[in-house]
Length: 447
Image (cartoon, rainbow, N blue to C red):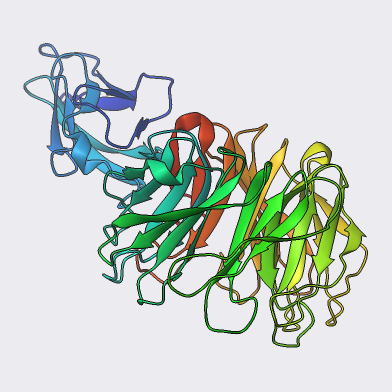
């Protein structure tokens, strides 16, 4: 009787590393990825060695004797390009060979662009007219301008010390078709510094204008319908101050209007539908929002206050319920909430509805971040060093969608399409990280 032929031993391949198979994008060559390949063969004819038959185009390498997988080319690991890669490992004892594929995840690393100091404000605009979004951030060292490359990345910043301050706004103050900057400054008794744009993303100092001690939040717009950009400053010691523009890059002396207790930030919008810009101010100690209706000639009516949450430090304005009129979001720092104040259409507002966010919120940006045609909120939280994304339901109510690490001590934020894909991306002024953090939609948030 013929003897049965013995079945050959099977070479088994497994991962003996208990850690997740994941590596940060851009990791240095030699970084371990959490994958140690182990080949097991009952009657091996010699030591088992390892090789990669698919190295993800050279991104990874394997130690032939230990089976440890490491990064070979970190430049190929870009979270915005691919969130994972597949490699194929071959193991052999010289006679028996087996192969198996493994997936290695790519971990997103927050991109932070240095601003020469801790930024407290950031705004997005095309500052050099090339069709790509740039940003300007306000720091104690100066206004910091970074030009965009059009793909969500930015060039090294240029600082303008003459515009060092707390808040910065973008407008064409001298009517030459180029965007200019204005910054609020606590120094020199409180003032507004103007930088005039050359058109190529560089700026020239245009002068400083008194705004009173305690100058903080800043907004720009045409307040008297003369087609010239004007400025409003929130002054913690004396209400809101209106500086009308002359259209040549200079500003007139300020006129002060009373607001609530310790106004900290201002925004402009047509709140009552008459075609004239009105003022909304957040009152730090008043726990309220002050509304000043504009007369259309650069003057304003007596403020009316609406209750907000504890320590209303900031605000945002936008149409939250699709009725065509601007509503108000109050940032309530001590309450860890944002308050939604819906506009009745005539510049008066309904009682607030509060939504819990992160610890010590500092700002909110309004925009449609998920592409459903409805306004959403991105809220920065200083105390928890993250952002909260609240998706709108279209009726002025919101649901918390997700949170993301933001860099240290996030202050202001702004939404804009940074890489030309038609989606709103997010910039965050990360004061404690001395730079601006970039969140690309779909990749860094809304995933």
